[in-house]
Each structure stands twice: as structure tokens, then as C-alpha cells.
Image (tube, rainbow, N blue to C red; front, side):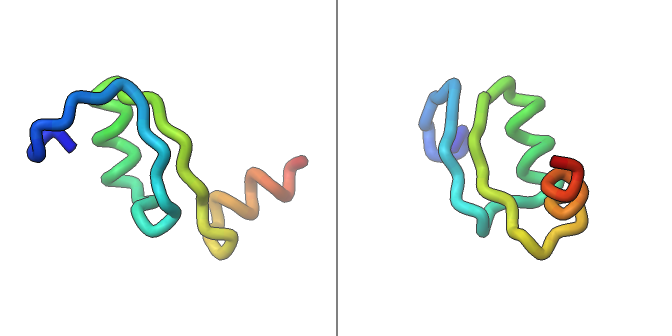
Length: 51
């Protein structure tokens, strides 16, 4: 978004963009975000399995 000149403080992101690199960039930029995780990810199963 920054490369496109878009200044933002929050983002709603499609699951296709879920990656460790993208999450790190969002956190480093201080952007609050909501992103859907793919159900096949180990991290997802760990979170949902603990509910």
C-alpha cells in the first residue's frame, strides 16, 4: 500500500495474502489488520483446536 501512495492505519485482507512476511510488514508499519487464515495451516489448527 505504501508503494502505491496509500496511507492507512487499518486493513481488511483476503486470506490469499496471509503469510509471515505480510504479517511482519503490517506489524512493523503499525497497521491494525483483520485477515482470514486458511484452515489448512498448522497455526489455524492450533488456535481453533484450543477453543
